[in-house]
Image: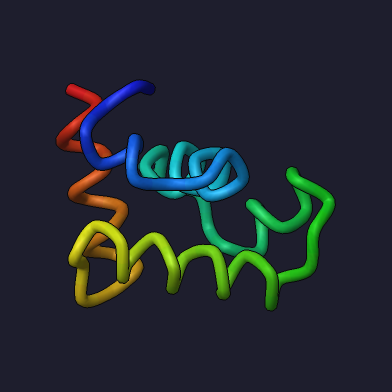
Length: 68
């Protein structure tokens, strides 16, 4: 996924964003990337700030639409 929104993110944020856009829960993302749930939460918050989303759900929708 190489899109305008994704270009604003760090490598690790892109990894989280890809899974978020696929509809994965934050707990799943934490386990899959072998990081804490709090770290995922922080990445999601940073992703939301960078792409202008109000919530994790909105960020997931925005990222998923850009994948299409």
